[in-house]
Length: 394
Image (cartoon, rainbow, N blue to C red; front, side, top):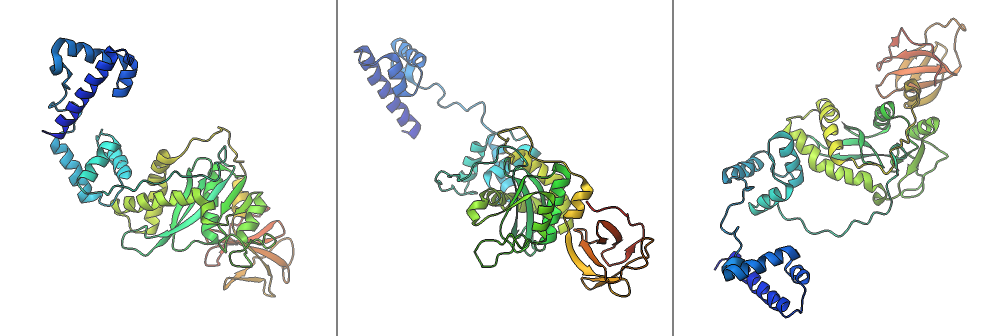
């Protein structure tokens, strides 16, 4: 006797016992149906069929019949072969999403998971305890952004790289993500500039206590907000509150995002055959992020936006490295082993011994300011850009 037949016999015996108790008026028809896990109406149907046909009327008429919704065996074999050949190591949800996006696959996640587990291609996940969230999301976008980086072998057969991500606390939408050899001040500015130019200024930015974000006099201690880094100075200039995280758990939103990205993004890059940083960054921005955000963005509690629009020129002049220098006797300014020659000015005969500010932008260009006035702009190599704007800094 098969397992299905054994279960059928037990169900019939249970029904007969409940029918007898209903006849003795110990149970109502609704209560008997609830014990069987069926409705009162279905229990009445079983009773009528038993009275008309006896035990034969209780046999499940679906037994031995193939489901109309069942996938053909050859199609099931094709899906399993596809996983073995191209998607080995992908988790079931990622594989299911990709099948739905790129093929006419119409079966559900649970069906696919059971088939992959049955074939020994994926292991059964251990049951996890309920996640206890310590802090609720912000109610609307723009109230708090997270920026963090994850070092990982994002490109196949390449050394580990840093993926710098800027995302929203309210929705987990990723506004900026790109690969760099090592995160630092300029990668921070690049991520913020990409985000602020499109979205606007947020109320606050939440980061770890990396040295490019904060000065921390004592390892593991509190940050010194009286000694801002270049990032701290820029955020203060823009009016964005900079919040330091004091534990990995405090950055749970970005940590969970990186868990998803490490599982999916690296596999997607390998599948696309991309193993070069510039090409990867273009593909991430143009192809991956729209799909990722459509899949993982959470609707905010409030529809209002906390972002504030601002002038792009203001952003570019704030999100840069700014250092003070004194002009030499030959009207040059030394910066990062480069001698920046000041051009003649109609405003004064020279700037010798004048204190100026040198700005180094994320695109590696430079500019020299005296007060609010831009005296000159330079290429990454320190060559004067002739058509420099004489505009006030924001």
